Length: 133
Image (tube, rainbow, N blue to C red; front, side, top):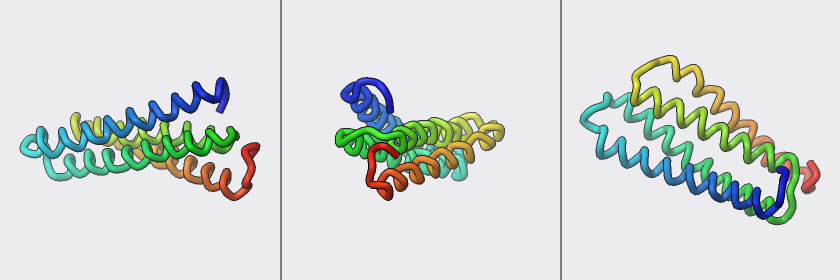
């Protein structure tokens, strides 16, 4: 994580909050606005995307709390990976459900890999006990 510490922490909180907002909005939109318009499978895609986005929005806020104690490359990697995962994984599921175009399904695993990289980086940060990892 580079730049002014306060600025990057504000960025991660904002990113986490925006992802939480989108997760709640998409979940509610699917449950109330789309339930009679989309097939059950598509509604499940939106629910899955919303759930993953919410958890990883919270993870971004967790990155902020850890970064407040000191920055490290592993934390930066975790944050960027969680954010990329939200965009690629959840975003592709939303677009798949709303458009029906199966091409978006090829992006979803990339988002899943980004989530895995984020959790691995966060674990590395914790295991090394250093903010220099």
